Image (cartoon, rainbow, N blue to C red; front, top):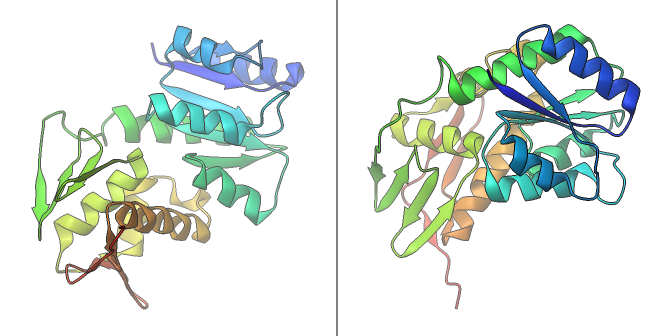
Length: 235
């Protein structure tokens, strides 16, 4: 049975979510100690986290960053905040999706199923230790790692999916619709800005291993890996 962790300080909302999600056969736990969220996370070891932003002590952005240090499990933000920057911040801090309150319980279930399929189910990568190489760049999809020369960096699941698409399609363009389909099978619920935010995150990861201009925007088509990148001198 797949396990869902709910981090929501409104007991009515938390109870409603728990009751509804359990009807679909999931094992659901609600966090009660909001000063030590990671303690519950370690105990439950969830397959997916539903995470509010406005929480006591530390906000949801903080807890998502802590989760990302330990796990690549899907994190779906739930929040009454409807601003674009709130959604951008959620994605920038490691979130996989964002649902605004008030929400439809059925959309929550649809998004949970979608993320679980992407992470563990029929759309998940075959568990083997593959290596994809291009122009000195080595990508390990199952390990969620990217290496260039002596530099190595860890990736989130979505960052890894984007990089895998770029490297597999090179020198062809990875179309925006193709990337959206790979990342989110429920495209009707995805804001256009969401892909842009994730591409920005991927570019930052390339920069962290010293590669500038590694992702080229092909106007009106999508994105392409640029192997003629400029190496950043970090001395």
